[in-house]
Image 1 (cartoon, rainbow, N blue to C red):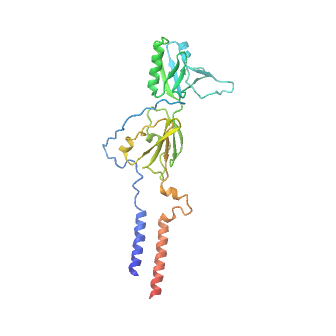
Image 2 (tube, rainbow, N blue to C red):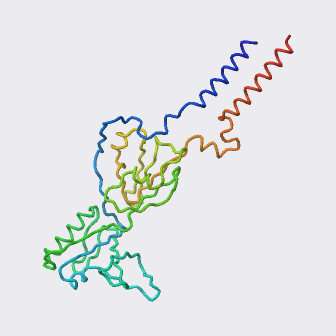
Image 3 (cartoon, rainbow, N blue to C red):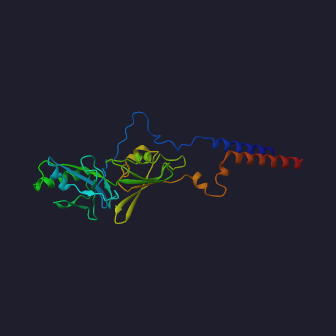
Length: 277
């Protein structure tokens, strides 16, 4: 009986010591050491997709000629507009805004004078080059400077992060680390080795990817290391967080619970030994 008592006490002590061990799935990139080089499989620029909004500004030596290609929308008396617009600065009147070009379902925009231009699948720089060539080849402008910016590029970060939400960005290349940082980092309860990324591949379909923040090279080799507009990042909760949704929660996993159980076991064992004498 004494041996059983000693065994029970030892088991409780082992459980208490185990609960004090340091978790190994919290620190990002534990496999990296000083001087390691991580190579992404490929650098992925943001590319134009249907329903994207583009800010396209043509500058020439003739302001009147430039105005011909820049969509100017005048505000109404309530100082509001009927579509999404963005200010372009002092070059325009205070009552004027530059209207965005919306990419249609065929990947096209309607550009003044030129007409339909297919920009789907292009990077921001490629769109600027395409419009520049069209203006010159049609003998419309000799020396245009075309500036293209994405106006509604964003990703959604949800789940176990400090600040879930949709985050707009203005970079040609955005990594998943950038997006997580914008959302305030993962909470302590976020699963770092199994993050889900959903990517829109058109026609109402999304492709799912899983990435591991504990393996730097595996992450860099993932197709979603560089994000695209409208990607969704989901950080799932760990088991501890999931248990909090149950009535008993994490009570059986706390040191105080096992101390109580150990004390109860010792009391029962002592009682049995006393009665057996």
